[in-house]
Image 1 (tube, one colour):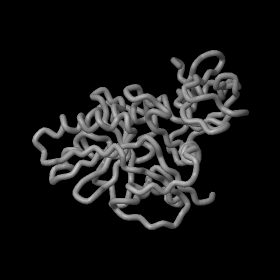
Image 2 (tube, rainbow, N blue to C red; image 1 turned 60 degrees about the vertical axis):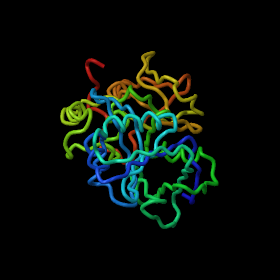
Image 3 (cartoon, rainbow, N blue to C red; image 1 turned 90 degrees about the vertical axis):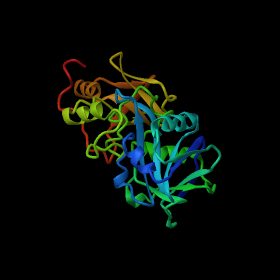
Length: 284
């Protein structure tokens, strides 16, 4: 794989600084900030009390606080929601809508705590780096989408709808985006129950088509029954949010899985620690 650098469009930044910033954030978001090192980027979410993803983001440390990188349409509402939860905590919340964001991989650039950080959603050997404040991308954004697809890295707006997915559905439990050790956060009881009972049935999978895949949002079907939905697509590769019990059933029965009229194969992302169920659910 050759070195690539891509400007990432449609992102905004929310910075939370001050002496109480980390304490109040640790009590509401899914990411364990105690495990977030300088120079690292980790995914995370702010959930509803029912455990569904209300906002998703990438979080990094900055001088005096933390920076949240998230889709621009979410940013203002996210900042307002943090303001509601801040209460009397000594923390300042700042929205930046126009700061450039780029990503690079397989290069040997150094990094600093503030401007360039390693994206921990990907294997360390890929050297996937997120750059803040300086545009530097030269490749087409499809190259970045292709890298996300290859590693099963889903993002809201492209691969799932906010308010409709649990953290397990979009593999946040696989990429360091949700903690089961740090204690309470909003929606924690539901998410912990799913983890301990092993009841997550929807997962983000990698879809490979016999030909070019149709657009994001196209239903996946098996035997005429919908089993999932396509997300990001580049050529014949894409991400799919699918019921793994129904995928297993189709695989066992030799039933073709279709995205529109294109036959697809669904695979578990390479770094994932979950598998297809040994048997399809009787209630699938």
